[in-house]
Image 1 (tube, protein in one colour):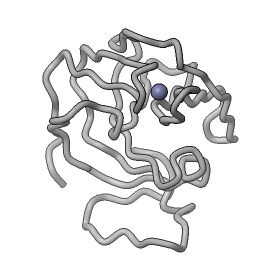
Image 2: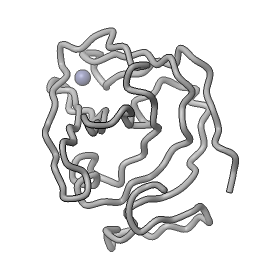
Image 3: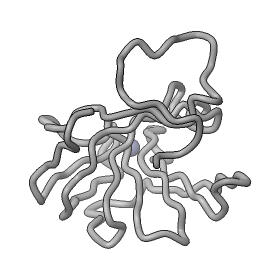
Image 4: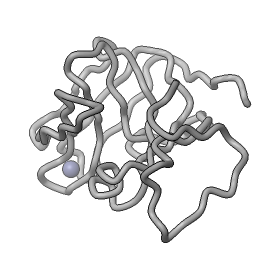
Length: 142
Ligand SMILES: [Zn+2]
């Protein structure tokens, strides 16, 4: 397994149309692909996320930001953030935790992160296969 790549502070990103823009002042975890059924619905495919301290996220523009409460037995109190103007999926936030997951595709290039693993492969769909040798977890990231 690769060492967890880290990015430099000040990383920025946002949605497709610009109605949500953010800045991150934290080291970013490598990208983890989540194959749960809810991420697939939310993203239209598996979810690819980095993870940061919630307090390190600064919203520079949030006029489009909406939060959808996305509760499961394993993850109560989870909210998924998206842009209500262009539809970009952006955040996964368990509000009782100190971290927030940020959709990798919403980060501005160059992202300078590598994919480090897969979670919730117990819920993977049948239209694709994981063909890399990265760590795989039946449920969440260990
Ligand atoms: Zn937008």
